[in-house]
Amino acid sequence: MVKYYARGGKALRSAFNSFSATDTIAWFEERGIPLKTEEDGRMFPFSNDSQTIINCFLDEAAKYKVNILTKAEVTDIQSSGTGFTLTMNEKEQSKADVLLIACGGHAKSSAYQFLASTGHSIVEPVPSLFTFNLPGHPITKLMGVVAPNVAVTIAKSKAKQIGPLLITHWGLSGPAVLKTSAWEARTLFDMDYHYEVLVNWVPDFNEETLRADMEQQRRALSASFVAKRPLYELPRRLWEYFCQQAEIAETIRWADLPNKQMNRLISQLVRSSFMANGKTTFKEEFVTAGGIELSEVDFRTMESKKVPNLYFAGEVLDIDGVTGGFNFQAAWTTAWIAAHAIANKASAG
Image 1 (cartoon, rainbow, N blue to C red):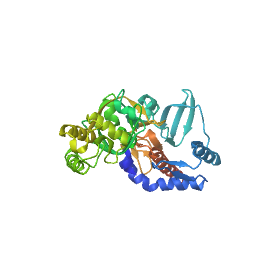
Image 2 (tube, rainbow, N blue to C red; image 1 turned 180 degrees about the vertical axis):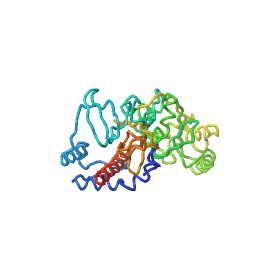
Image 3 (cartoon, one colour; image 1 turned 30 degrees about the vertical axis):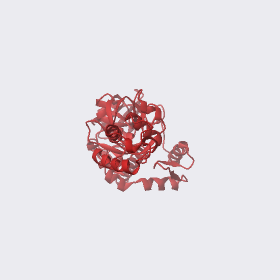
Image 4 (cartoon, rainbow, N blue to C red; image 1 turned 90 degrees about the horizontal axis):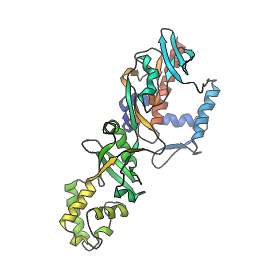
């Protein structure tokens, strides 16, 4: 599980031993909501309606007489030896013995100002999980084409992400790109989202090994037209695009392929370069890297190490994962741990 988190994976390792994805599935099933797994690994209720999950939580809250206040923005928190005073909408006040912050992530650090008085450090939030914009690039004409397995790297970075890649009308998307955006979130933010993307469309090969393999292909497929015989399980339209970029005419057979054109094709396959300019939010997801500094929280209980009886859960922490339900799982796991710690402390006191 932890390998799916760009930030927070190490801290979550022990947390998932307390409440894992299996526990989540069982929790919902006990409440009459079976879940299903899609081909891409994401999980949904069989109803295919997110309102099913929302209603489940609301029913659970009603069952235990949880009072939910709406239109009550918390603007300030003051702690004392006897508890907390919350100021809402800048005037109303409410007191609490124990406080659990589970407000989710925010795009701007100013949204965390109500936590400033608690003395906690806020890691500057930046976007995560986004697709790469390639304005005007010819590859966008292949929108809808999926390469089953590629390696994506940001130039000057050693990090490499492998997985499917989807070409869209605005640029590059798919799991390999989304993982790259997550792990390189701060680097790309610092670059103001102007960066070079490198794609190896045949990640089992490097330039040397691909050249050796292509020499074999040239002998074995000597009578075949290069552009009309896709190799390496690449989609036909994508293969034709690479041949066009390498200036390989449709009438060229493997036996007649000049070394110059073959070298260009190899370069296209192992190191395509794209200059990205901007980002696009993936579907309707908006995930942020940043939040409460993890070293200031005890992950055995989710209690603050600085302020007794103050707890944190979910994306308000500097935790973010890739798409597929991992951010939900981190939120539910940390909330489960915090709730049990609070209940145990109450019963002991």
